[in-house]
Image 1 (cartoon, rainbow, N blue to C red):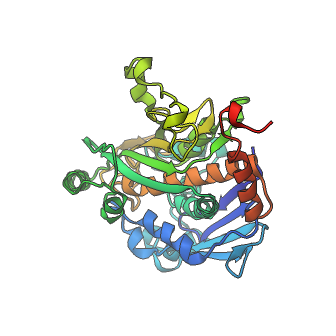
Image 2 (cartoon, rainbow, N blue to C red; image 1 turned 135 degrees about the vertical axis):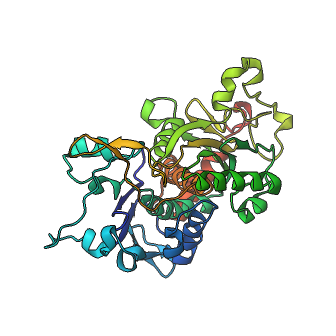
Amino acid sequence: MGTFRWFTAGESHGPGLTIVVEGMPAGVPLSEAYIREQLARRQKGHGRGGRMKIETDYAQIRGGVRHGKTLGSPIALWIENRDHATGTGPDKRPWTETMALEPVDVEVQRVTRLRPGHADLAASLKYGYRDARDSLERASARESAARVAAGTVARKLCEEVGLTFHSHVVRIGEVSHEPETVDWEAVEASNVRCADAEVGEQMVATIDAAKQDGDSVGGVVEARVSNMPYGLGSHVHWDRKLSGRIAQAVISMNAFKGVEIGAGFRAAERRGSLVHDVVLPRDEWGEHPWRHRSNNAGGIEGGTSNGEDLVVRVAVKPIATLAHPLPSADLDSGALVEAHYERSDVCVVPAAGVIVEAMLALVLADAILEKFGGDRLSETRGNMASFLATLLPRDELPE
């Protein structure tokens, strides 16, 4: 793979989230305001919990940028957790005490009532925790803010070479909307990121019903990346396939339990003649070389991008923390208890699409630099243009 790497650190109710992005070429425009736009999109959506009223996520750039452009050195970002300083933790104790770095003199309430569907039990057994808070703080969806910040850095590189990103909700619970074309402005205006206002109201009602029942609800989101270049990824090794890299990155996010590219599982219901995308002859290409009549492959064939839009769908399970907790077991005694409850969302599906966009940007930035290289943006662009100039029928290429 390429040399583009990223890391996050920090806990849900700790002081904040740290992000380091390494491998960005020099000369890419980048500002805190640009990152804030994407962080704000992640915070929106009907069904989010009370924490979204506390936090106003803002990523401070603490290294790697000067006078509005990247330097080619690692980029460091910091997102403060306002709830750490202003909120109250268990037993009304401040989070500064519950999440203190040094040992404290008072007894801090432990979390031992395990939550089904969360990392509580598996992580406690693996790492030897006696307090499930040691895992739930890092296994929290709060880390998605750090991913969106890192993904926004990657997104900027992708946009500078022509890619565009969008996402929308296609299902919440049993309510679905699958349009052939999407009004992206309507999506951004919707509080459930659905282009159809009437269907959006049904989705809102589904979320409200789950909230009233002390329950949660999941769904499906679709992300699309347009103006994809040819040649990202490769067919030659399993770990270089773009499809595999995307699937791993997306499924690594909390609550994301399924991923499909293009027709995905729907293709399994059809015959091959109705699935495979016909390659158009030369006189039907228009301005772009080598086009397809359809895009059931979702922009990837043989692990390599094929010039069509990248289309990725993700299944998002219902949030594991429920206001009306499920029965569970206690970590100390193994006895029957009600699962632990901590302030949580009812539905994160509207925000999930923004997170998927970020994860795709991180994978694509890495693949772009792997394919085209470049220590500065102009070099990357030049290398990409040189490659695209070779995408002609073999008989049309110069000797």
